[in-house]
Length: 451
Ligand code: TYD
Ligand code: MG
Image (tube, rainbow, N blue to C red):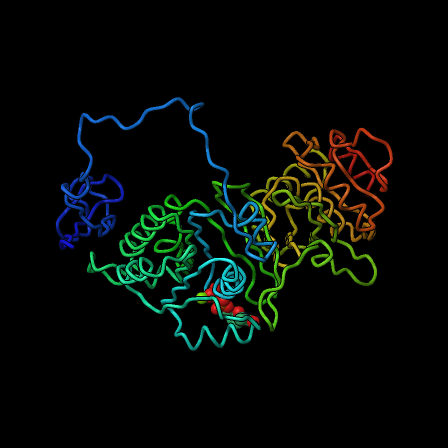
């Protein structure tokens, strides 16, 4: 293969320079030059001649083939993938180091390996380490082919002789291509290595899993730079301190986004959690002030989580507003609404709000629960353990409907809750749903009910 030269291109204006400089000579931006491979024009255009039309067709003439899917044997992972691994698709799994990416893929590949041909490429761990992990997970590795290698060209050559249907590359940050001189893990290497692997996967119809570490200082050399190249992006979240792990689809060409899968990390690997609500709601003892259960929705799945608030007198000029698992700006806005429309002031109070279990709730349906918990803590009055709440609160003090209200109500009834504070517009049309519904139009109505 011809030696490929590298150039440095500016991320801002696209100008290129033969060597690295701190300031882009063209647009004067600082520190925007990154190494990239130059593909000679002759190879880039090989086989393609100007004047020869590609086949242009009407959309209606194209009959897509049925998408074939391979079940991974882990139903929570199948769910986030949109119903199994699509043959020939490229999936990026991102997450902090040590969160469990290798564990999940080893478990999934051991199952997939029973029916198809799998090649697991590790650039981080030795074969011994992988074997030890598999042993600990109680997996039979008799059908899993293993390769420990860092160079993309060798991996592709190996894949050409092995003909796997699924390849796992763990992790893309440890891979390098001989095209570039920069060190493995640099943006250019990550991007170019991934591009070569993706090209190979697409040409041969191989499904490809790329593992990417999210770097500490932002996500520069991390999976972010690859998101546009792949079909599906999954992020693995969760506190390394707690056992819960959530895998979330943030991009999926073959399924819904925001779908989540819930796992618990145990002694023997990742265990699926089929009913996350019961896990996040480990409420024992009497009802306490400042706690309320929120019916939230993640993808197609309703989930009950506990929202806790602590409101305490502040000695600071700027009282603190701290959120864990929620949006801090949204909290500031909600406290303003609370003051303006319900006359409840918190300007001399520190407000802390937390979602129990390390869950992250970013939807506006949490508004009503956040305010209910805040007011409950401020008044030092518990809300009762049988209550759930959801609803968006607008700037005019109105309570707005949220999507999939019925599913949330049903989930709460299923788990034995007795009362639900819901937006009036989310009231079910049909009669009894097995739970007392408290419909509210305005924030003030909600606060009256919670008196
Ligand atoms: P790993 O999959 O190696 O993380 P990643 O590939 O995302 O960097 O998982 C590492 C952590 O998981 C490690 O701290 C140990 C823990 N673990 C368990 O608790 N139980 C297990 O059975 C396994 C295999 C790992
Ligand atoms: Mg790993």
